[in-house]
Figure 1 (cartoon, rainbow, N blue to C red):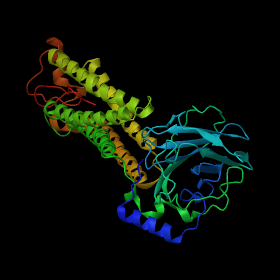
Figure 2: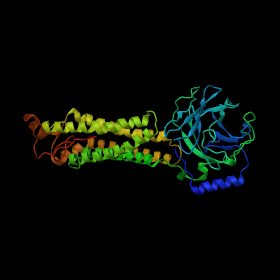
Figure 3: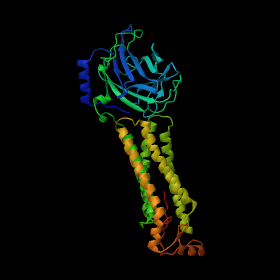
Figure 4: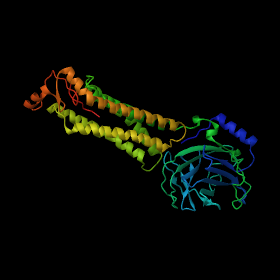
Length: 442
């Protein structure tokens, strides 16, 4: 996730904070969740050298599985402080580094010191700590006088993790967002022993949602292109082009000439989208996760196995005039991979966090379109199965059994199935037109 503040917004924020805030720790909440809060405080009260220290407080109800605050405007490269229950009365604070749109990794190079008041009390999870290298001069990049300091947050509802392992695996967030903090304003005159978070105020912090609409949120161009290409291929093109085969029973067409090339086009689009996704995954240095692994399986199967099955069935039919088990496997394997790809698209949106902003809209559109296409796909097959064969018999005066017209069965039997009368159109499991049958039926 990336939060970008336009120049005019930055100037407006800096001006409003400079002219209107008092020196108090900065407090902000996720939109609509006043029971979750983040407090940022800068204090030099504990440092004899006069350098500043950065104190952070994270609070959330115990019904939250984990909650996190990150220093930065996007996950990649951010210092992220992940908080979850270690027991019924205590919490774990795990400093991590973000690598992209994947769970952050534990980073022992981010030292923290817990403060008194950390724990779980009256159903409220509280983490209070000092980040010892978040400011410049201590290995960090932020300056204590920065008027615009960017932060991100996220949380996941659910059962408590109850682990004191700082390497604990977490599920993907339910919601996320960002904030801008004026560190020059978020000052505390108290040291770590005298509650540096007292008198916290929202004057020195502003949620991204308060500043502008979804234009402040954007995925990378590569991520958007990946999602669009894969959605078009799996949700639209693969299912629609697959329908050309059953539709040939009522709409005569040279399916071998139409179906296979169009599915090849859809496959090329899917491979292009897969390539972008693979680069996003590898650049993030992320461990294996469900979405990229499933995507790899689906695309590789459609690129390598599916065309081979279709080609084998095509050669078999040219020799025998009959359908083999290659046809059945080709059909159902293709359907399965398409369904897997559609489901994986939903997993990818969930992976990014679809509860806010344009991702929520995109997820809704994706689900609606996938549902409509699925209904149409099933409806066409039901219609062809019930009425298509009867319409063909009425039109051509022939009777089908096992996919072959009655006149054809005797000829196929006496000639070993190798020769079919030229004047009998091939339908159902076979093709109308030359060369003969469906090579790439899904």
